[in-house]
Length: 252
Image (tube, rainbow, N blue to C red; front, side, top):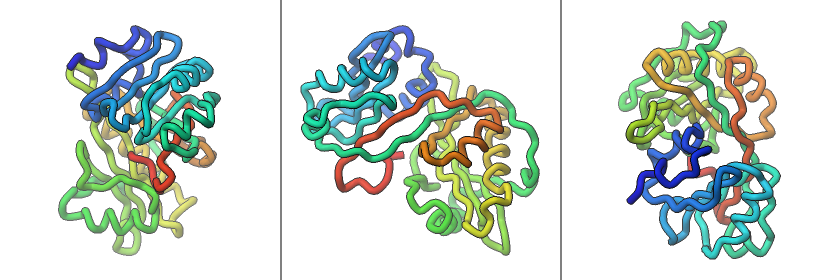
């Protein structure tokens, strides 16, 4: 099987989203060009679809596909595949979200000193307990593949906030870290706990040699966006996602 970087149009061979996610992809078919590209991930049987580039051109690529059903589809915001195409793929609208990244060491923030690295085994149940209250919709888990580590802040003897990191990249790439599962228990929100967790992990990533740090967030979360931009993140892409009707969370 050809390496993804060998079949991508030249513009997309330095795209952080594609470089980061390729560690998770076993089989990828690529259609399109430098203006718009569509990836069919996982082979022809129920692929996941990811579009990058000009929204109108991605829309045209999706509508021109002869596949279905699909596992998942994310396209640039502004792309509107036809209702017939979405129905043939067996999908329904699911979410709008953004992908952000940074390669800049963040400024020091209050509370960062209280953040500690957690043990993936010994602290696993405590992490899950925190997530059940702080971020019940996440698919992140300390036992998941490619996990580098989890960090947390304790409050009243339990974890009050947590965030996890997975390694992304492919053979020959500069490795990157991807944040997921950030959650702060309701009674600690607004205290800077989420900011401290994020700053500490970005600092740890860049100190450890990560080329960049990335994360995804739902588009309606204006508070989180302001936090991330303040810490040096940039918004690299805005997406619309479609999922099977029974889906209750993103695939991570």
